[in-house]
Image (cartoon, rainbow over all chains, first blue to last red; front, side):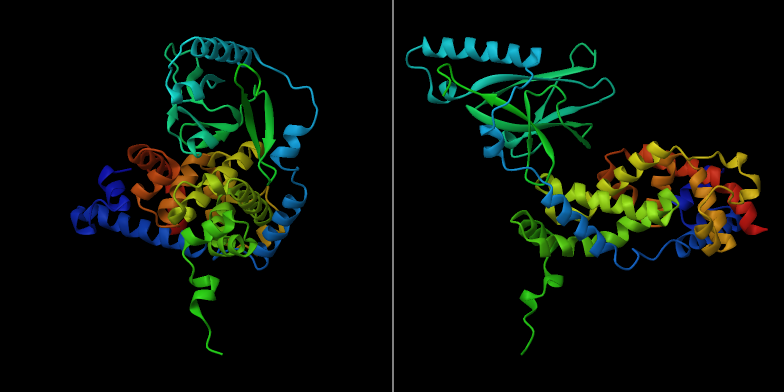
Length: 200
Length: 188
């Protein structure tokens, strides 16, 4: 297909900018595109909004209890190696801070946690969570190009929810999280629990 | 009593609806659904080629949006955010179906594998268009529909799909190349 015709159809070239032999072809395309537009459905069928809202109601009804109920429920949770490493790093860091009199208040209150995700096809991976107000401000790195992305983030002690954003578009739940949390609508976020040395 | 425009939810901005929905207002999210269901449905029906599949896709997209509404970074552009969720839902659905048929393998562009009720209600031109669109690879079909049915600019498409403008132009160009067979049929 002639590149000038493509440019016209893209809106980058006026009809007058085409040579005469292409104008007829351009007008044929205009007719076809108009046909495609007018034969497209005008909109949603009657009652779709009612169906959607009923499905939302059912979804809400099936939602799990809130995070406090989840947190207090006794359960066994799998702890992946990355979490063990993160916990070890946290302990080491806290030990170091305890042994350093006069350490800054901010440094004392935050603990570095390592996040790791296997995403070999990704071009970018961001960590988002309640600690970033769900904004993609923390970009993970894959320095050796092996598809394993990681990053260390200073977190306040407590329970945090997070997800990974692949290529700025796909929000995925960490398959190796220590726990999972419903957000009240049935969506699963990954959970990381950060505690100080004395376990409070 | 004189109607108070401020109480009419149809006059509330998208951003305010998102805020209200995040506070738990079902009415606000219902208005969001009503505003954008046509946009999502048109795209879904042309992408899936079937009305019932399109309805399912749109429903699942709105449920996903509701669950993740707090992750909408720009409430003023909630429509574009919803479209992206809907477009991804279409692609997920099509991946699970794998119904794409190369155009050259379709005898005379005649529908043979569709829903009989659906085929019956389609006119011959529309039927040919549906079949030709379904022959396109999913990403080409998506870009072509956004450009030529919804009338999006390449910049808007790029911002919504997070794909570069040159890549989107390439998809649309390739879609047009594929659809030239339709032009021959249409012009005859």
